[in-house]
Length: 617
Image (cartoon, rainbow, N blue to C red):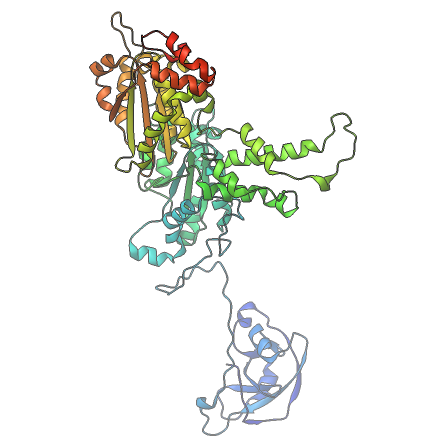
């Protein structure tokens, strides 16, 4: 054993040369080696061990063979290299030699990274080695308005992976192996999944578009699914719990994981894909080092077995951003132009965020691109395209953004054109009372109202006014004229889609215009569509998701027919809208300003005593 001493007797010193040991095994010992003659020269009478001084303080045990070979441990302590000349002398321990007088010099040896020894019950702090960054700034990652969703994903999918494996084992739980991101198109599902993959240490995430897995050859599709998990299987087989995390991202997963038995292609390929995925994620030899992230805007199409705990058990809805989320998204997409002084001082992102209700993240990006196109177009002369461009004068102004809002219309916004076509200003008073009633209602997330009255009394106009003046972010009108030529099943699917879209908005209004026409009612017969009738009955009674409020307004001129079907009972309140009388007609004419004040009474007198229809006005 080597050590440093400040005492002891030593003989005359000899000069010797340092060389490598003849074998690797000798290099790992704690001794020095020499020839037999030198060994006898340094041996002390009556001593079992030959001890030598190297230099002035390091003591080594000397053994045979060779000249004066030295191993790596000795060379580090004596601070010499192979080929150096060193001073060596005999060391004789003093009387009453005590180890208590020994001063040791300790050093640490770093183990190899691929060592298989495991330390059991070792206490460790929460480890962040699973992530590349210790702090997360979502805006720097290009993610806006999704802080709550990211927090939920971290808690459900990654919190258990931060702790050592023995802690998870003692808790008796398994890591989450899959999550599903669902929501309307353009809300950032794919972006969120890609950024999660980039945040993780370990293997690069595998990104697969659903249809890419399909193959025309029998069995090839299932093989493609198995190949996605091959690397993870090899890692788990060789490294066990120390295996890297493998992330597999499935975009448009609904294309390949439809409910089993729902497709009738005769091949059963889609059923086999679902079975293969279930086997890999949660089968007999299930993997614990895999995180499968699926994305879809049609969660209802997925097989139920794929969504239960142990498979894609974490379901996170990536919804339309609120005002604060829209502000973050606008800040992300305008940060470069602001940094380079291309954003005009009059641009108020806060105002734009307030005006872009129900815009998705992709649509907000489209608004920014459209605004930039207006700014760039001002610098281009169509008469002379060779004219030099002045980059310094490019400014994206607030007017550019306002023009862009007219170009980019949200898919889940209000159908303003359809509503304006039905709107008549003379119903404003009555409509605003109904709007206030809906806004203050907190007892139920669903309020339904039926406006019934004779044809031409202004029911559709009242409903349209409610939609426009309500300032709700989602307003859609369902009318028979938009479904001409469609089959019963297609009409039902279109009605259901409008309701499903409305559930994604915090506040929404759906107008069912002329319900009897939607039902294909004919007085002679009578004939109507029972399929559409049952669909409406279900939708009118189905509560929207938690945190969503909806107003459904129906109009009809055949209230007796709807009563016989039980549809009237599905509405919480029914208002009768009578025809206009002369007094109402006078107010309408005053609002329209089509007559002078002196001629107004004369015009009203010319009207018949019969009820007046708004069409006549």
